[in-house]
Image (cartoon, rainbow, N blue to C red):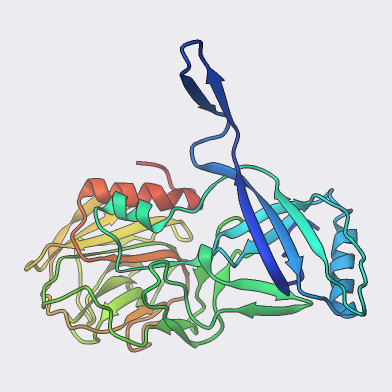
Amino acid sequence: MSDVLYPIGALKAVAVSRQDRTLVDAFEDGTTTSRRFWAAQNFKRKVQLQHAPLTLQEFRYLRSFFSQRSGGYDYFWFRDNVNRGGNLKVRFTQPLPEQWDGGARPVAVELAEVGPIRALPEFDEIATAAGSAPLLWYDANREYYLTHAGTVLNDTSAYDVMLIQHPVWQAGTPPIGNLLGQYQQYTFTGAEWAKTAANLAGLSGSQPACTVFAIAKHGTIAARQVLFSVGAMGTSKAVGIEVNASNFYTPFLGGSETWAIAQQSNGTPNTWRSFAVTWAAASNSATFYTNAASIGSESNTRAYTAGPAALGAAIDGTLKASGNVAHALVFAGALTLAQVKAVHNLLGYQYGLAQV
């Protein structure tokens, strides 16, 4: 009964506070020192909800949900959509009030996270790790998703953490996978894909310095699929990451380019890996990284043309993906090995990737 989402989304007010466990010791000379009980940047969150007045039917959903959890006994998932804070594994901390006021049912609920968890990395942490802020960052953990009295509500566009361009879903429903878990991913089935309405700003010239980064896993692939891409369709006109028909992850340049060195076998399918491709300015040479280790460098002609960003397909909606993408980022610079490692370490723990 534990793996379910909180059932009511009609909210008037939400307050989320992060609780830490820090012991501060005072010394005779007046100085103090502090010690953490939990790992760095780990918090338990407390959630205070004030529901908008509920109908009888809505309240019945909530009352039944409370009863099936045995009050504060069993945990469940609450998604912090307001703060884009992802999933919290929580319990009720107070009895459910059955209040009636002039025909309305205003209900206040308090929830508490059951264990400390690392706060989702913020954009400034990524910028520090990479040496510059990303031009875009699609993060499935921050997607808007809730259930309300049996109805699912979600965004019509993917979420860009940088708040610059949110790509609109062109087909299918928002493919958010592992909703009843701590971390989510975009789970594509070959139907869904998203695209920004405008061209992505920040990459200029035909051979811009840039880096594309993604965390992904796929089953065995027998036809080309693009995880995400930026630019225009046509040979050498884009940048991105794909899985080719030979079941290898490679860079994507918008055409049918081939790679012999800058590629990673998906011979062990359904395995989470991080991928990065870097290009220096005025260079055709791409360096490919898997789990923050360099696979090698290889040259393919680039003639980048400004265009939109696409997630789950190539820019024109072809070569749709059928697999999982957790994070997708683009930087206007060629990250160093140390910077690729730092970005990998900030995000990879969510999907069981080893620190490097």
